[in-house]
Length: 463
Image (cartoon, rainbow, N blue to C red; front, top):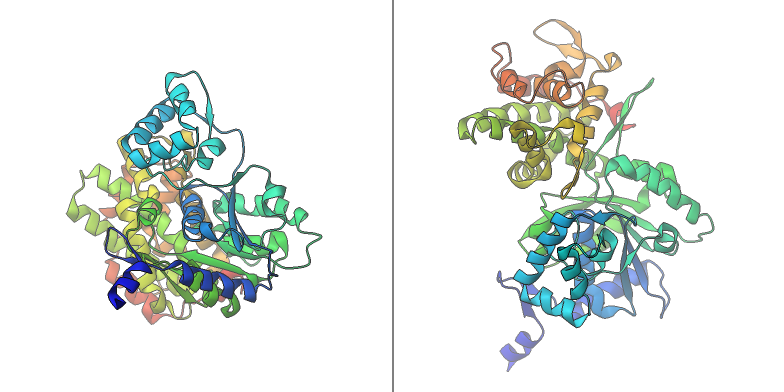
């Protein structure tokens, strides 16, 4: 009898993980509602801003988990209107729909199937916000999501939000949240903002530093940093939605990170918490830099395991060197940074972008916003890290040349990626020349230099 009762209170996923019962979910909602001071009958409003792959999946996961508790929690997502779906994508989308019986039945039940037939035939134009309502993210067509409440008016989406999920690229974050701040001028309560963005920008001036998306949000809106958090980890959006086991960290002030870790966590998606917000955020942007180069090396060497391992040794040594500039205790970042780098090199869009450039299937004239993939944030991250670490005022001692040099001189891979992607001085093939440069130091030596010299520069984080 006890076994039967237990079975009734849980649902088992196909991968063997156990889903929380509805009662446990309601308890998590009630705890967060109480912390946020929500009155009975006033739902907790969660709003996703930006509908790329990860932003859409994050909103869909919340909808899947808490959609049955509509009186207590409501989720919606904002994306810009007017983005047309081209004919080829519409045809592929139709194939995806017909390959999934559950999706096909859902669309027929919602009287939404006919428009996809018409779009396949070229008799109708679909729009990205329109298909997102049916659970299709334009950057991730092959992974249907649950239906979502989509709002295309930014003011309508965010004005009464309790929790805002930033799913925008770092290059768009400041501009959009500056607009949002105009709609929050009359607010009495302060919203909580969780940023998913893995990108950075450089602020050059008398005191050069890195600006992260959470800092951009704080500057644009005036929302205090204790109410702005970062969530990141070694996550591939489509795999997480398909309930592959994954974990992430939510970083920020203790008041919010611990209850939000509990609220956001699921049996297949474990959320840990950490106080080190900005450094984790920067590490999320750093791995995108080297993922592009990894993709180039893989394509140019016909997936040579030896060449990829040589590249990995050099790029990880550069990342270790950079973490010694950015963190007082860089060894604490080694695990999260390497895990995030590993998954990005395996299956991330930045590595894919590097491969396509090297194969000639993409070119730099196409920009860094790619159809079907979204924003390639590694390009702007290369620019940010190169320009920042090139500043002479940040010079550090070089033990071999016996003089101070700009930190970028310890990072030949970063320098070459900048010359390929931004200056366009060299073609992608030059990444191999950089690896084969006989003057390049042993990666071990770069790590030893970082570990034996006091390179930590807190000013790089604006601290």
